[in-house]
Length: 82
Image 1 (cartoon, one colour):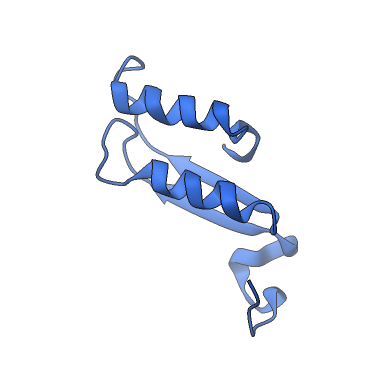
Image 2 (cartoon, rainbow, N blue to C red):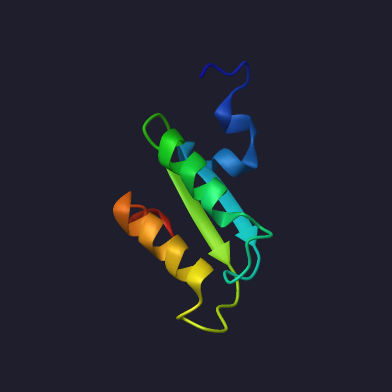
């Protein structure tokens, strides 16, 4: 990907790093955290990415939450997540 702007001009590119914040409960598919994680997985090969997901996990046994954790583990994304 080639962009026509300077990363330094954008605050979300501070320190030459792409900073992404998403807010939403992790037990719902509505926010589609898996789609975001898949995009981050692809983009991290070209960019330094920092992902922060803020959200409530009411049940650690929730199938959607477990699927998200499994995806993160399979693709070694835990290191990118706060």
